[in-house]
Image (cartoon, rainbow, N blue to C red; front, side, top):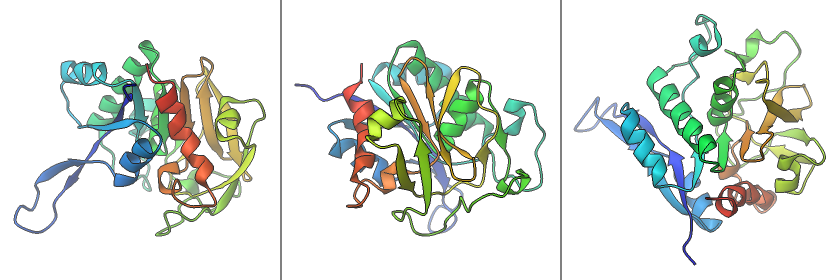
Length: 242
């Protein structure tokens, strides 16, 4: 049986030293690749491009999509100007990710959005973000835990009978957290299905059952013996690949 090809939306890094300072490199973190392989898929990194026709052709070669983490989402996409505490934005990658998402949804391919990927899904569907955690008026947990990638640091409660709960096999779990932006207004056609104890949305899904969006990083937890159920999120993409 042929294993499905799972596209992982790539980012770019710019060399700051060495022989080629300023040289651009396409990449994704290796944990994404390992998580797809471990759960029965064939990972393909989808390199960033500004050519829409190339993006459409890229999506024609994959059966599932993972939207990876990265830069802050451009606030202009949800009708706001940039506030002082926003991080680096990259509007061209926003367009890239949103077109990948649009094509995946139009062709009924499963999508997993991770951290920035979850925020992109919400904004693409008409939702908004807090540009920084400090702009939320309610008392808020620490959502940017630092240099401990496989350490879960806060609890998430998941709605019973949601696709996310069925996928994970849990209605509560501990997650890792690396985001200074937060989901604010939920897009009207998405369902809020997971929250931290401070009320911050941590999980969204669409009504068709093809898109899962989560604020934590399951790819960093898939080898942790206490959180092996995070592999189920990648199995969702692999087993539903079309």
